[in-house]
Image (tube, rainbow, N blue to C red; front, side, top):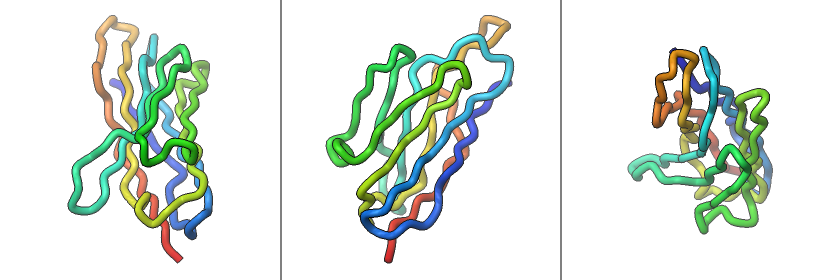
Length: 121
C-alpha cells in the first residue's frame, strides 16, 4: 500500500508565500511524475504544476513566475513553493503521483488527501 501526504497549507495574506510538501510512503521502488492540483469551491480540479522524475516541469499559466515545483527523489517528496499569492489561489491543493511498488505493481495516479490554502487579508 502506498500513500501521499501533503502538508504546509494554511492562511496567508495576499502577496505572501507558502511551501507545500508531498511525501510518498509505502513499499516504493519508484515515483514517476509528481504533480500538484487544486480545487476551489464550486470549481473543477485543475493542474497547477507537474515535474518528471528527471526534473522537467510544466505550470498552469495562472501560476507561472510565482510558483515553483521541485522534488527530492531520495525522499520521494515533492514541493510547491508559492510566492506572490493571490486570493484566487485559495483552494484545496492535492498531490498526485505515479508510483511503482516492490511487488512490481504500478499505481498510475495516487492522490493525497489535500491541504487547504487560504489567501486572505
